[in-house]
Image (cartoon, rainbow, N blue to C red; front, side):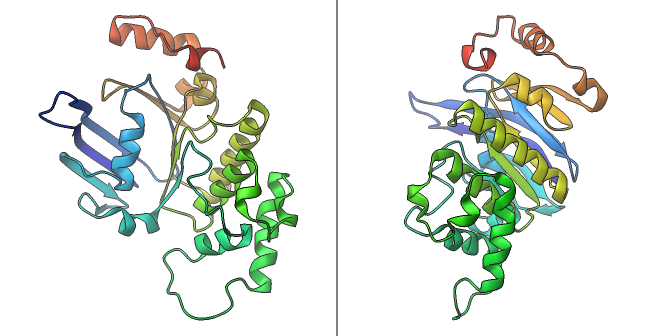
Length: 264
């Protein structure tokens, strides 16, 4: 479903602020794979997602989605094939619009638009049924402005909007990092259920090593713009946090020093 070949990206090239973000990334993701991505700050995790989504152009390399070369395709064209949930709950929704209006926009992604009632009675029932499993009371607040929702409620809504049209690839960029632990666990559980229910191909960047091991069928570790570890299947299921720490230390020659990733 996704092929990255020799992807390079440098920001502010030729200046004092030059930052090499990706150094020849190669990654093939099969249809239905749920890949978790871990690594320290500046490892290139979010940059890799931005390359896939088209938010930034690549300096060199090839990107294919579903066998189609999208390397030079602009973000708004690529968007019909990609669902994305950001770390910031405010990014994925329109705060001044109702819950049902946000869902209606997502529901119509990639479709032709015309003049008609924005949300039909049938759609409203559909949205209620989709929101009910989150157990956040959103199904009874369809005509509430999204700006009045909590961060967890907005992130749950964003997740539903990102998956409502069954994207070719779902990109999750630390999408529970800004939530309290209880809400984060709920959103993660619903994420896992949606991916399994619809057979989605997903890449989830996370700061939580335990979550990286628990969720998905494949795990990759990034460091200094490279993929240094790629594990899947039964080998992944048997991993422990100590195994990941050992792998990092072996590859980098230094101790892993991110308390944020260890103390969760």
